[in-house]
Amino acid sequence: MTRRREVSVAFQGNKTLAEYAALAELAEHLGFDAVGVYADLGFQPAIVPLLAMARATRRVRLGPAALNTWLLHPVEIAGQLAALDAASNGRAYLGLARGAWLEAIGIEERAPVARLREAIGAIRHLLAGREDEFASDLFPLPAGRLLRYEVARPDIPLLIGTWGPKLAALAGEVADEVKIGGSTNPALVPVMRRYLAIGEAQARRPLGTVGIVMGAVTVVDEDGPAARTRARQQVARYLPVVAPLDPTVDLPVDLLRRMAALVAARRDDEAAAMVPDDVLDRFAFSGTPDQIVRQTEALFAAGATRVEFGTPHGFTDAAGVTLLGERALPALRETLNRA
Image 1 (cartoon, rainbow, N blue to C red):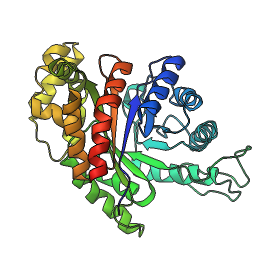
Image 2: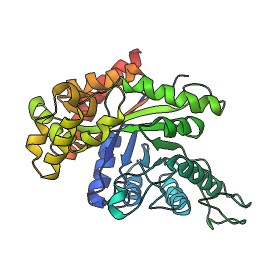
Image 3: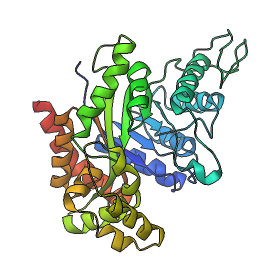
């Protein structure tokens, strides 16, 4: 199944509304296909910047990557997405994930696949305006129309964020895209495609129905070594968490433990020095625009359908997005048009 390949950008929830509006307008002007906002614990709710972005744009798709059902009930998720879809004239997508760092606030995740499956059913039930009862162990909905306002689109595209085979299989059954957050590793794309195929077959969907999104920390600058140094500092913070999730990467456990201990002690430079070049290239986009282009082309060649450049983009978000849009994106479009 052939899908249009896309390039997007995503931002952290730590900016002002004016900054979000300006960055989204810039990304749209430069030709990016979509703009996302992370929904990480401790940052502002993604819906707030997304609504500001909706008012500032006309074309790009917009969505959170990703909400979780431990902090938001499906009724609230459906309501937020309906509002975003209305504000953007039908450009919203919904990103869902099991959630991360929730143990810090006393939440113990249990049965994440079943929970996400039931939540997706409840959200779709609500957006469709159905009036029958929704039977669910976790998210039962009473008979009658619960959302008391008009919904622009009853079927908003769904993205599931995961590295694992079980949630990926669920994505194969019910989602439009799956996102591997924190990876730039082409070797992981065919692995994810195999996971998705299990769910696609189960739901009798054509193989390749679900798109694969690869997104990670991005630092681009004309000074390639400086960009890679900053990217190393960013990657060292999450590498101990995500490296064990990648079955194609085999890093020593003691190295990851030392790195995590250094990060916890705020010795970021020492932790960053432990990230080799080849590892950096599998967990971040970094370097000059030409280097970013080569990394992205390798992901598309491996079968990715969308690549998302994540925070911090450059030494400032605006500078990084501009350089990506003016230098990397045209080269990528030319390559994709030839394919």
